[in-house]
Image 1 (cartoon, helix red, strand yellow):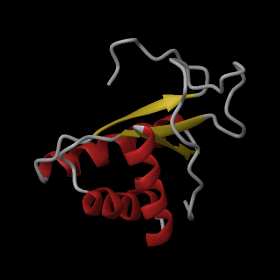
Image 2 (image 1 turned 90 degrees about the vertical axis):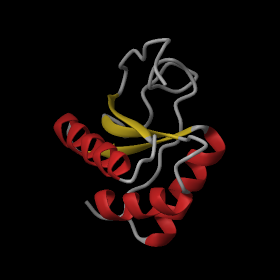
Image 3 (image 1 turned 30 degrees about the horizontal axis):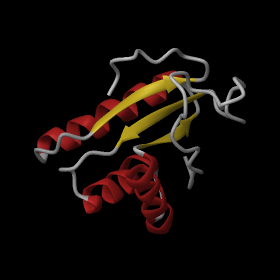
Image 4 (image 1 turned 135 degrees about the vertical axis):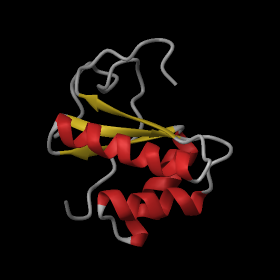
Length: 115
């Protein structure tokens, strides 16, 4: 995976736009949530490591996550999204960060209690 574009945080309880249409070009991805304890440096490093982002793109994605509450990063398959979410979570736990991320798919209903 080469430098990928950030879709942005979903704005409804579904991974779709406000108009109810799937986000353009989005099928599967990883949603990373902002928190008050995980360092920005760790998030940038994680994006570079697991998503093969260049530093500038990783900083942009981290900034979007920080200001919007979460960021969605597209993947080729659901399986890839699940593997990346697990790897990011494992790295975060190893460093004692509470970073939360999950694999998502377009049109997937997000439970009200998801965080």
